[in-house]
Length: 194
Image 1 (cartoon, rainbow, N blue to C red):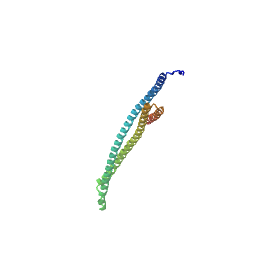
Image 2 (spheres, one colour; image 1 turned 30 degrees about the vertical axis):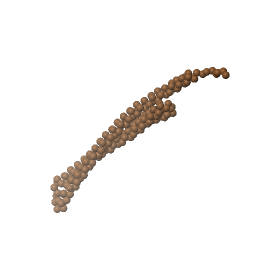
Image 3 (cartoon, one colour; image 1 turned 180 degrees about the vertical axis):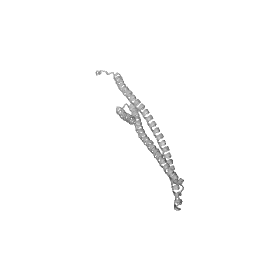
Image 4 (tube, rainbow, N blue to C red; image 1 turned 135 degrees about the horizontal axis):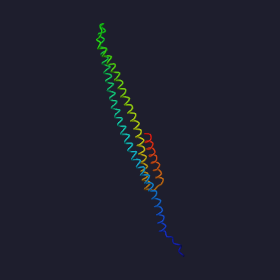
């Protein structure tokens, strides 16, 4: 029986392996590039998240301090009100005896009532400052949440990129790109909205 033509399978296998390596190498380089980009964005987004929450905490602390100062002012307001009531009531026995009360009692009452007005204005101003700082802190906390969500999406995209590199599965890499781009978009939106 005549032997058929011999095909050099070793050479063919070597050519196929080279082609697979060339295709796989380009895929690995692309996966590495996208993953490195996502890692850089995740690092920046993480810094922004940390910075915004720190600033929010400082504002919340300042708002708490302002609340304490406003409470002190309201206590002072009440004390002046009590003093005014005492000065008013001290005039009662004089009036009951059909005598003119000493003029300093009426002037004390008027002074305490005037002081109450100034104290009330100061307390309301402190409360306004408290509310402004608290509102700004809440805005920063919301911004922090957006950056944190961006970091989470970027990290999952990075993890999927690693899986794609190990398995050389393009579908997994597309998932990595999708999540990484969503995280990058969320990060960019947070920067622009801030």
